[in-house]
Length: 356
Image (cartoon, rainbow, N blue to C red; front, side, top):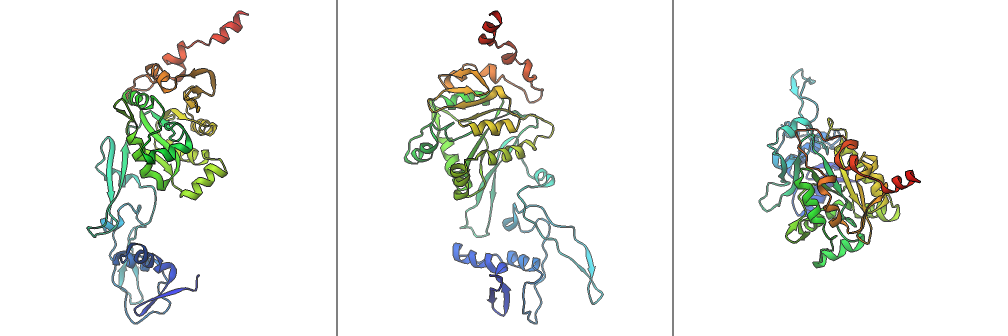
């Protein structure tokens, strides 16, 4: 309600301004950090409808801000500048942070990132009892080749049971998938896990992928990308609208922009639905390396019906060095039409047709 106001001591604030403080007290049992509250007040030009005869505390918010409070908030606002007040005294205008999901180049360069996985932690409070939020930043070479893998029905044996059975200790994973993905990773390809599961299931999904193993071989470590939406919106898109490709195409498109000097960073894609084919084609995954696994565990190339691996991942593993030849990130990959697999492959049906 725009006419709802909150009184704090002798000040009256708009509800939109005080809602974070009230919700912080209700849900987390903690007061909103005073500096954060002051920043919100300063950003609101009409922070108080009935001003008292007192002055606002002087704020001094710099670009970085408090690292425990503003870490990961994003880009800073405009540069500081001086303005002339009514009493003809120059006064410095403060700089405030602005929320964004995309850190700029300078912020990324300031982080001590190493090749591969880098663990980071976000502290939302200065209190020692407040647990940090953990995440991982992956630093890859700009010439890296990425292999995309769906999760439900691709690594798991089915969509629905793949959600339920791991919760009771049953892995329910496709046979041979850990060995195949490990062999692909050993040939210097990067493995990316992409799923339409909601963001709330990210920990469960990561724990499941870490638990999948066969004969002591685990799935290789790689980024796990989930839908940024909540449970109900994700279910609506996945079950009712049946358009999971909308999220995947947008996500893969954004990831592709991270490789400006690499026009085709996605080397292959694994899925279990026609929508996965649509998603991979939209980001120029080669047609000969879009693999779909059916409920019987057979892998086929939907755009090349002659390529079927009835033994599933185990059959594909026998050709891993042909279809995923070892590469070096310092050298360019052989052109698609001239690599060993495509140049020497023979279509027996076309030869029979020519003879007839």
